[in-house]
Image (cartoon, rainbow, N blue to C red; front, side):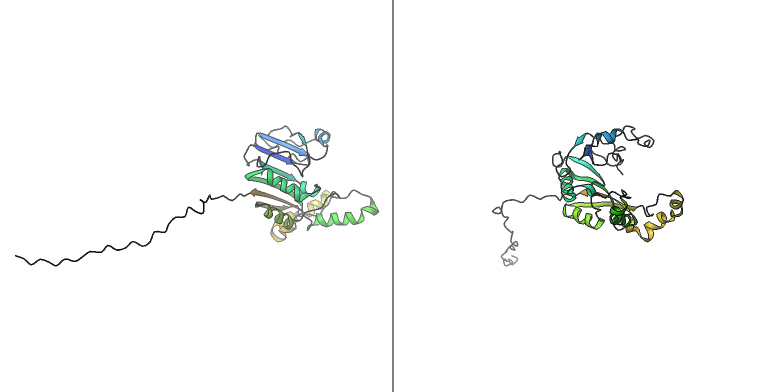
Length: 242
């Protein structure tokens, strides 16, 4: 998705292990993190990129709070949020900052976990039993999963229009390879029969700015042209022939 998005400035907020801007062709790209994860990013073992893509990973170049981004207003063409809103201290304020720094017709890509899914139910079960078992769980316990309906309301209030949306990962949270093979049919049937229950959603929203029309001062009103008065002609008596 990011390969065909053009512009000059692109930013990814959080999760340096994803390297979502690795295949993007914008000349200026940054990775922002709200924690000191630069050491973690340096020790990552990333898979080889596709053919013709740059091989160098994008380094963590800026450490900043997501609720106050260090960019001028209307200066970015693309912002990538890979599970960023779920772990942000104030997800709504983070989204407001994203809207502020985006240029008109700029795009934001959001990846998140769907709470109304098999993975969401698994996370709820882990939260109920974490005090008993002490296991870290399948999904992170920090933060809050944001439903797609809630996210759509936030985007609509900020003037961000959803352009593309997909659900993925319909299989349950299994770690056994044989069971993953047995449930592979759910990935094919999910988009057709229970499409909104995918465990991961992915959407692209574009910033729409309505145009303005300059109006003249109120005292410069144009006078209405009245109906044209018909021309009056006098009929002259025909002179008699000599």
